[in-house]
Image 1 (tube, rainbow, N blue to C red):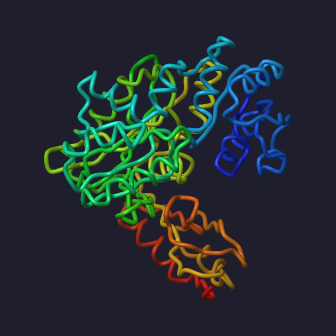
Image 2: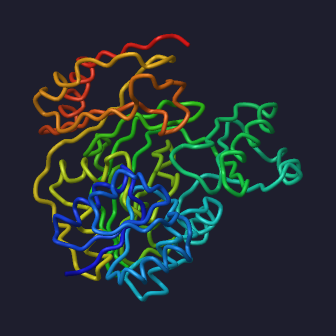
Length: 395
């Protein structure tokens, strides 16, 4: 029986833990939280932080891992690469992990490989900001170089907003570095990719719905993209170039792209499976391709089947709410019974405080649906959402 080591045991990694057990693997998980939801589903648990590189390596070595993987988050990627390289297992290099988790090094890699990207500046102090502020055009975006999930993203409209916005972005990162870049207008998409022996294979292009300025938190996705076919093709080619630019040889990539009036430009890339249920639900529901299984097989040194089985539509829509204290939620069962609904999940509970949606962790739940087309799947999600009544008491 092959042994799979999964970094993280949160709700994000739970689909991978369940899939690995379904595949007949012996599974260990590593997480700093002994109460993590995925631990009971695994065979062994290691109390190790997902960003502790040496700790993850030693735990995987002690476990006798045949493969190491994670799902949907950038945080463990360097620990994953460190461990796989030291143990001689299938995975990305440490250099690739850095390029895929440091937005500054990432955009420099795009620049070196002629991958279309926004203009940018990288600053690590207010002194550095003063040196380049006269070269910045507005509006623009600031975000920490080393965080994800829309944390620390700010839209800056004027020079007067620059300093405070950069300070906010800096405070949301781990090392304080900030990237200031062009505010790209257009349609934002993500591209789900599997790279095999250096060749990227695009599995699906996903339309994205966000809250807009100032934080651009994702509130919905649908597949396949409803963009014109010629635009989808140019997006796919850019995603492939981006995967090569950061050095992914074997494994998944989650690529975010903005289709601007001058063509597609990179937002960023993750050398991992995408989150927000895109790779765990939407891709399988729209193509029949099991991306989680494929990623596990790659981690174990096996060749996955990434052939599309069908063409359908899938969508996820996150629930809206007012600010205040969550008092009651009704209509969940009715929403689940809506034809085409695959899943309804709540991530907030009675008594929780609901604030503004500044990052993905502020969302309160979602609905996932499958139908013949993307438009129909979106309609199913919206129908189900209308059946859910959320009562909120003002603070």
